[in-house]
Length: 323
Image: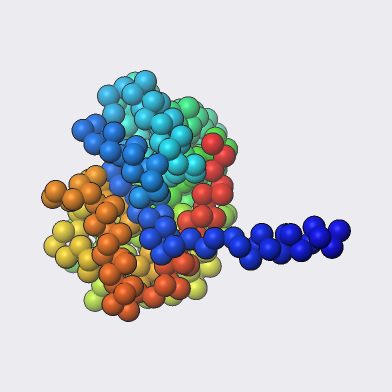
């Protein structure tokens, strides 16, 4: 018995701590393009990123998608395979022949029981296709969501999230802390815009996308995803969220230099950087992002402890995957 205890202690002491590069790689989600599939699979096998994002333009048909997701899982256990599927015109499932009712139409035409039935079918379709993460639902009262009624949005969003969970798909609610009316000159955080996110957090949501809008009455100097006040203080400290924070697509934030985007997002409290292109100019996006993060750590612009915190949150999320 003593020998067994000694052996277990030795094994624990000799457990290899992931290198900085291994930790950083888990923070990166890259886009899928047909032309880069072979390289994508090879890099997945080497652990050069922790997740992939599949758009409606990334795959040709169901067979193509199932083959891709199966191959990715064979290359890397627990890899995050994400889509942004909530129906509407820009829908992967619509392209593949499934129903595609938008969130707004669901809330306007289906009662909660019928909505549950539809969302569960949608979730099972994603699971069958090999998807384990859905960057949805949108809970912005002025975005592509369930509507401007906060209570209704909260109710339908929770049914959406529960349906995905029931099928084994992780929901990533977006875009915290709520999008502004695009016709307004100012963006102000209110109890109503925040309510759907607070209710989802109270119900155990595992991941949230932080948006790119300025919230003038919280932090008028930084977009939400670059704001420590919004991500660390409001989302984590005040609302009690302890899950994974995803970025919006970094490809769409090119008015700010890439390295600056990365440093600001991580220091604000962000965990997963989404870049929907596999290449940035002539370099692999994962390779370039990794180097920028490691350089920033060496320059003491990001701490190693901050990277480890993200790594631990991401690995905890991956522990929820049942593939």
